[in-house]
Image 1 (cartoon, one colour):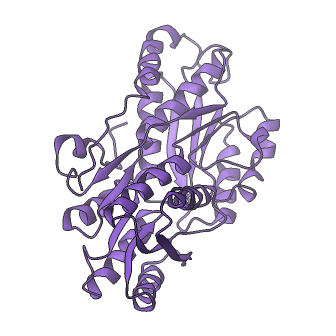
Image 2 (cartoon, rainbow, N blue to C red):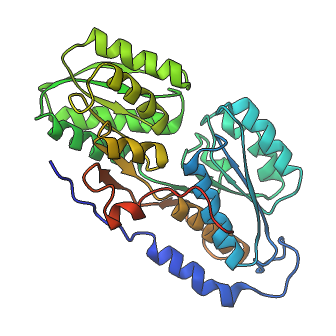
Length: 333
């Protein structure tokens, strides 16, 4: 089954308005905190996982957009293992440098808000990106894909691949993470329309290649009639792909995932992965900077900003349109 790529332009207007602002907003102020002046405004970025191409794209989008406006946007700071405790220390460290704004993706929706209480007291603008904090008083704007809706779309595609019936398993990570929660809830909601599909397992292995591979291998052994696997991130799809190869089940057991970094692109090309949700993290970084610029200029800030998603399939991965959906993970800014 071929799923057509739906090129989305939801973010175009946001980018256009940001570009138009370059000439109008680059006043002569040198201090980032000066009312109305975005030039020189200091922006810090803290993500949940170092080296992840997705969050590198968010930072790249923010740095590119900030550079156009004359902002001082720092390099992304992130922990090595998505530990919220480690991330909180990083947030506290960057806040000690007195940024005008913080672009932040928490690893945990509750504990991730702890270091932001002092930030709000100090007047730091917080752009929560991708993973929503439970306490919406701790952020000024939330920029994200609709993970619930994306999960429904990719699960519907997977259900159609297996003819609407059979056994299916899901592999997630960090069950308390708001992104994981939304992606599992969307998965479960989509399957309500397919009564002949049975979810035999929803698991949350540790975030390590060996743990994920072991989990997927055990699932394949326990459920020999398994038709499909849904994974909530590229780490899980990479580990599950090894299990599928070892079990000679590549293509026989369908698999879908999230994101279009190099790991999932390779899996799409080899056929271990049939489809994945393509987000637009670069646009998210741009959108976060736009909201920060609005706040500095005294304009209305949007509490929630939605970024587009689409589905990239193994059939579309090497088309010109498909290549545009890949995460580059680096930029010149």
